[in-house]
Amino acid sequence: MRKRVKWIGMLVIVTLLMIGGIVYGLIPYSPIPDPQPKSSRMTSQQKQNKVKDKEMPSSPSMHLSQERVNHVLKKYEDRTPTYWGEKVPGVRLRLPTKERVMALTFDACGGAKGSQVDEGLLRYLASEKIPATLFINSRWIDANPKRFRQLAKNPLFEIANHGTEHRPLSVNGRSIYGIKGTKSLKDALDEIVTNQRKIASITGKMPRYFRSGTAYYDDVTVAAAKELGIEVVNFNILGDAGATYNRLQVKEALFHARPGSIVIGHMNHPEGETAEGIRDAVPLLRKKGYRFVKIEDIEKHSEKVH
Ligand SMILES: [Zn+2]
Image 1: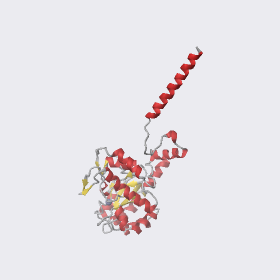
Image 2: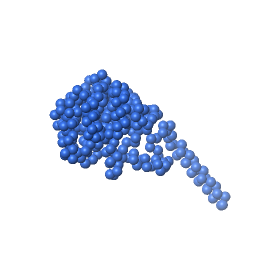
Image 3: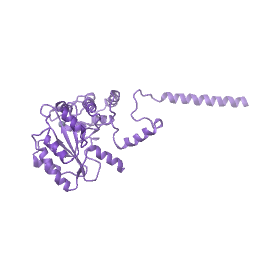
Image 4: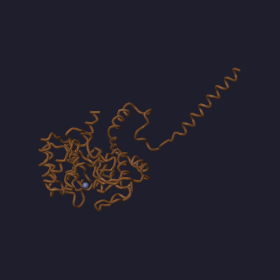
C-alpha cells in the first residue's frame, strides 16, 4: 500500500515537470529585445520608467538601434493604411491643457528654395524670450550648420525632426501638392531615422517629435513612428500657409488660438511676412493671458498634474 502511494506521488511529480516543460517550450522566444520587458523581470528603475512611459512616448534612445528599426519595419510592413492627411489618428494637433498656453512651431524645410534663415523672426523670439519648437530638415542643417548648432544650444528652443528629404510619409508613394511621398514603410522610416540620428549626433539629444515635409501621413507610418518612440506633431492653427500669408493674415490666424493650440509657421522664408505677423500678434495674445511653451514643456507639465 505504502509502495503504491509512493509510486502515485512520483507519477504526479513527473507529470507536473512534463507540463512545466511543455508550457516553457511554448513561450515564444523573441530574438529582438522587447522595448517594454515583462513586469516580472523589471528592476525598480525600469518600473519607474514604465510609469513615465504610460504618460508620454518613451524617449527614443540616443542610438536608435538598427535592430529596433528593423523590429518596427517587420511589425508594420504588411499593414494597409486607412487614412491619409494632416489629421490622421495618432497625430498630435494640440496640447493637452485647458490653460491659456500655446506652442509656436516653426519649420525649416531646406532644399533649393527653403534653406534661408529668418533672422528677424529668431531675433524677435530670443529678445522677447518666447520659447518655440523648431522642426528642422536635414538639408537645412547642411546649409546652415553653424546656425543650427547655435539654435540647438539655446534652451529657449526645442529641436524637432522635419525629415531628411522633406517627403510626405506614405507606405505606398502617395503624393500631395505634387510632392511624391515615400514609397514604402522602409523609405518612410529612413525619412525619419536618418535625420533623427543626424540631429542626435550634432546636438547630443534625440528629438522627441517629428513633422513630415507637407505635414501629410498615412496612419501606418504614424503608428510606426510612435513605436520608435517618436511622436508625430502637426498643428491646429495654420500660422503662415507656407510663409505665403501677409502680416495681417498671420496676425489674424494666431488670433484663432485656443488653450493648447499648436501654431505652424516657417523660419526659412525671411522674404515672407511671418515675423511681422508674429510680432503683431504676440503682445495682444499676452494681453489675453496667453503664454508660450515648447511642446516638451507641456508634456512635462501634464506629467506633474496627473
Ligand atoms: Zn517643411
